[in-house]
Length: 320
Image (cartoon, rainbow, N blue to C red; front, top):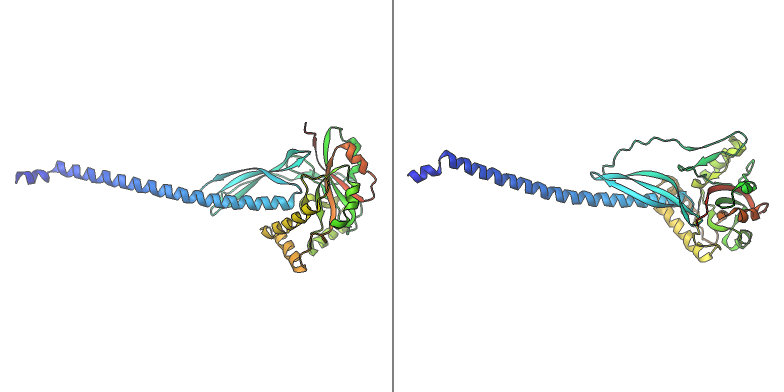
């Protein structure tokens, strides 16, 4: 009887309660750790998935909006089912990577909220061509569509002599008329002294062409032209001469990239191309090119009747 009373005395009851509480704490902590681990893994998987998708979308946007542009660096921070990141947009000039600007992206089910403050770069002095700049101060190139009638055409080739001898110059060239790839032997022969890095293609919606014409009619002569972020084309990073096989492959890649874009304007363009019937690479119109070279190379293009207009882009020191 005494042993039975001892088993139920106050001290033993307290010990049993403490043991039960300890076991419960261990159980709760264990479950919490397991839940956190599983939740963390799930969150990591979700964030990684949306981060990859965001990078792919950004990469498509850069390919379509910046001639010869690419993402040179990308950093993402994961949060709860989402995050944000930064990426640098660059282009190679004379074999040297030039960072044009740094952008911010948001992704995920619960993306971070960003507060960005800034102002666009550029200026327009009376009587001079307006200038648009990338974030890091490099000039944006301007093109002129050969099937539109402009009041005046930019001619930066006449300024080449003012550039120091040791600089590598990027320049946008607009042709006197559209050319097909089988006709490119003529422009190619005229551009043999410079490196052709990109070809401008006539890929615009009808609405966009009407918009360009309205701008010509309404704006000052030196405020017109099509900026480089509004044109589409094909890059030739490793070629001094235009290679037809590479051109055909790159054209199909361009159409495929358009189809994968989430941007409304590119989706509309793709749908219009498909509606009209996809143009084959052989029939696509080439309206201009981007070339690179030193002053001594570009001066050989001065006065060439094939060149309707010319516009400086990035100018940088030669890579030694």
